[in-house]
Length: 126
Ligand SMILES: [Zn+2]
Image 1 (cartoon, rainbow, N blue to C red):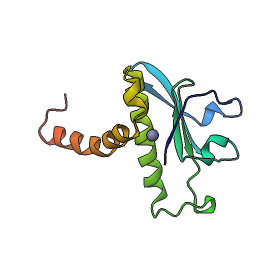
Image 2: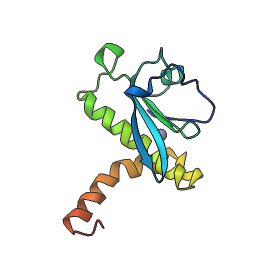
Image 3: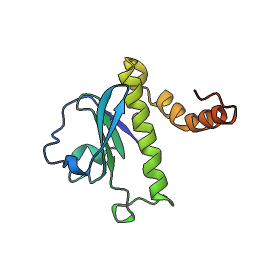
Image 4: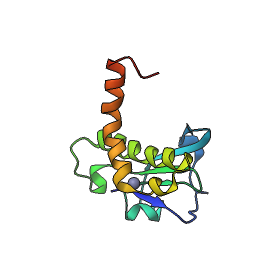
């Protein structure tokens, strides 16, 4: 489950040293991984979220100790991150309605690798 943040969250306790910077259509976002629900209350209700206003993507701490039963937790983290990055791209494109549409975001996140693979096979990716 993933979420979107519409309010302001306090990130002052987050160390940017552990963050990954990404450039989303000219706007810098920071990705934070392995954040517990104790560190960030918002993660009690979701496994990750994209904060358009603070320009941050925050992923939960996907460990068995935290109750995650998925077989491949690294795969699960990548899956959640792909989803949150799609949220950011749609938002930074100005497509604000689509950026909060979980159905289209998840569709793109799932289908994009398949579309990209086809583009590569056909050598039409650029
Ligand atoms: Zn989402």
